[in-house]
Image (cartoon, rainbow over all chains, first blue to last red; front, side, top):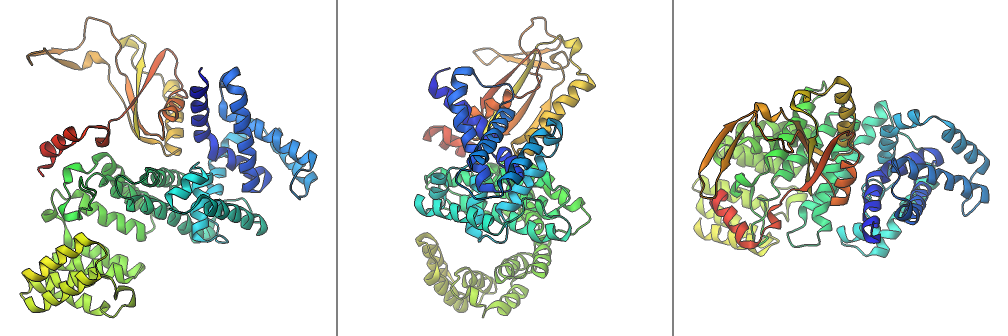
Length: 414
Length: 130
């Protein structure tokens, strides 16, 4: 095999095995930073050996055995880190003595423990995101830096600090259970959601690493949904992401400008992802616990996905879902969206009443969509002068030029 | 990016139905794909004898034939649609199929961006009505 080709297939093996490798090693050495270093060492060894000797039949097992041996070597030489070495050597030795089958059995658990460790509450949100992409997504530090538009040095430091924080806090490498799982799962799901949105916000023509974040988030979301199948929010989140991702091709036009949901060409929505999203939503709904915020947002997205055209949207159901969402996860933005749905379902008057209730919300004072929605409702009631004032205000606040033009035009037409 | 992995079983049609053992082994593989967040969809196909063919000649004329078919040739027995980060990663997963006496072919799925501008425009006119 030519060298370049060999390197690429080794890297592919690495991408497939990396997260499980780090997870399995972290279980032994109780330190994700060290586990990652050991896994890296195993990769270096593979890059040396495999091009000549060929890729072994079970490359994952080879990498794991190599990394374990390396762990023991390191500890014997007492290199670079201060830990209770005898204890660690003993532990690693005991682990290695376990038969392969039982190690195999715990792989999913190790992976889940790694996810929970990367999203541990001792870390800030940015650190959780970075560490998750590094250790579970297998993205390189420069890739993560590019994806989040920060310098490589900044990102490298963020990751190093995160690993140090976990080590200093002696965060146990485990999957929480019972109420602790309920408390900590939202942080895991939030990280996946943030990664997805970061990719979703990227525009066409941008560095491909950024749109790639959506795929990465989908992959992680699918993994978590498989690992905790009884958690409605894990199913709800993946349902939401699948349905949102189904609109990727329709949500920007060929000039890269965003297209509003109502104006999107629905034939360009991806039916496979919609079907997957609806299936995940059905799984969430089949669980005894009620839908959480992600599940409800997925249910709303599903209403849009199921409508053949914008006019055929079931706004009554969407308004009810927003009401449920507002009850468990109240926010001015949810209220604003609810008002839009109520306006579509029941007419402008009840919608205006909802908007009046959030008119003074500090979070919305600079948000152009509040006056824009208000203007739209007032225009429908034939209150032209008031509508015009709202559209003018919205135009002043709008961040992008195209939206500003659109709002000015509506002001003139009112 | 998406890849289709086609399974070409090298077996006679009368042996088409897999054993419980084969199915169990394949299910473990499918589960692994699913747990890795890679699997989008998969299906197994009935043998070609139960299917049919529509052949178009170069002028667009049609010949419809029902199975079974006389000539032996490679036939698809099933497929997986996966999301992978590179062709190499898809190939790595293909190499993990618990196969015996079969070929697994990996093909990348076209995305709209893979087409030149004029083709993209034509697709929009055709399906989008923009």
